[in-house]
View 1 (tube, each protein chain N blue to C red):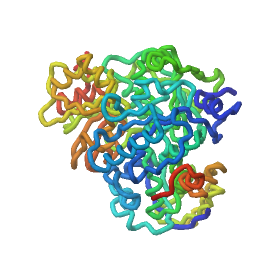
View 2 (cartoon, helix red, strand yellow):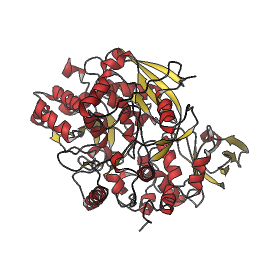
View 3 (tube, rainbow over the protein chains, first blue to last red):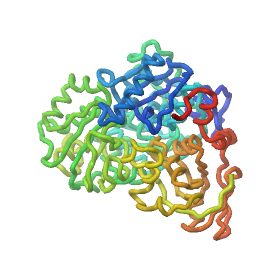
View 4 (cartoon, rainbow over the protein chains, first blue to last red):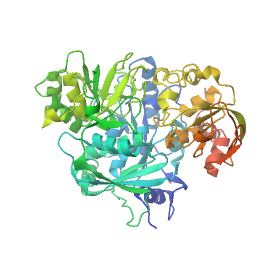
Length: 418
Length: 166
């Protein structure tokens, strides 16, 4: 019996001929990302030796610019660490800043068939590049940084066969909400995306699916490799050696499920939990909102900002509603300025936050007060995720969020885009 | 590692924001532990007796990489047993030496307040109150060794790779 993508990369990087579900495998870590939260006083432990500084990427992303003294202190600890070990791939606040998972895409850091590790739960984002990537704990990062390896417990794999093409105003976020709504949590399982429909999804759209797979509690989320993906990396990281891993024809899956992209419609997740909680936008339409948020590692790309801009073009954000847009990286920010999307968004009354995780985690740049209602295109709608536990967070696509910002109530985006 | 104590029960999809809310992100681990389930079960941390056992449903610990397992340990719980555990939460159980066990059906086999007897290494969970025994997924040997040795930090300290806690 053959192996899935995740099993094959585990075998390759673990120096084993075969890996099956249930195995615990020690693998070499090719790329390791540290970010500002690793350096927070309640988490940071001083590293004395590094296994290989050239494998490390460091970014300040969760709280930039520093919103308070504690974050500022973490940033200072981070900069001292970078200096001490001479780490070259450092994304300090400013020209090169961004959410780590977006930087991975911007710079082609995640290579097919390799292992990438970071202690942010949305690290599975890099699976879009056929890379074995997942979020781990902060101690795992310390272990990988000092010893060069980590362990993974191999789970069974669920394969999603994408078919067809998304209709106008329907996005990969809606495709994710469809999967999460119907199939719920995938705890202890990997997810693998492929099928003829992937050709109709951009890298940014595919990245929404892999990033959001953290919300399925998936172990690893990996896309099949194709020329579109390989060309993306070559353009950004020309000297990288590309060795994509394809699933075996007789790979054993826990399940193979078809997703007909053409049949989807705009969806929202209702507040407090992501899985088993998706509904057509009309189920929540008319709900008054205080805040609308486009951003995060899941939906802060140029494509997301341009989609939001198309929706709000020539319109104004509703009185009493705050529309916050957070480009996922400084590169995305600059691209959106050049493309005109930023002008359109600002003209409509959007507030543009600097590239940061920001409001997604309730840390800063859009924290919710008691009983406030938000619709977000970010990663989570958990109780208290974006502020007070009494606040309510709905989750939808950037198009749905932008349409809702204009009306001040949750709104189906199709009337704005058709 | 064997435990016998009263159980507390929570439902499916318990997430890390409920266990370790962002409002105490900058606080000490001890203060963070005071806030476990403050949004969904205020006052619970004061009712927990040292050694009590937490029982969860499906997908316990979904969400972020924050050290939620450390908070549960600091509350005084001896272990968490759930129908299924989120993989990242499971890692942090090993990392912070807090026993976490997957045991399908455990949430159906217990009512809150029942007494559980747990043989963690054998992955056997017995409801003493109702006289029901379940078998969980044993912890792989190398992860068990890491957990019993106190998790990752003591190991890295011993090897001189990280500085002792200042």
